[in-house]
Image (tube, rainbow, N blue to C red; front, side, top):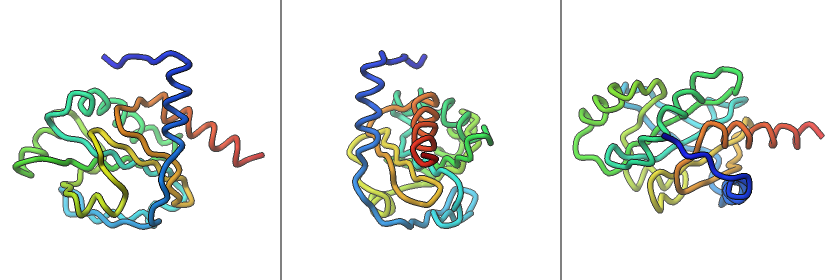
Length: 160
């Protein structure tokens, strides 16, 4: 069960989430189905890149929220899940299927992750705005509500 943080913890978490280090505006990754994913192909959509592992309890807790984010077309958001620290790609695919993961799953490694940014712990999430700019980074679990709140706030700021 996901724990709901207090307002002050949420505000602090969003502040940390906002302070993302600048990174190159392009990456290329190939998912377990063999499809290539480039940041530039998602122009006009939010892109959330989530680094996770099958053995990581907070990673597993956030998967249902990530599925909901990816499937909710109102968000104009794409989720890319990057599996790290695994022994066998087939095990990752089977695991993702058992968790009903509907977003693309990429078999990651340190070199591939370096295209995006440091992965200092799992889960680690990077969020790109619809213009392809990295706008948020968080080490630790996220929730659907956190991401949707951040997007709403960013869109309000952009409209002003």
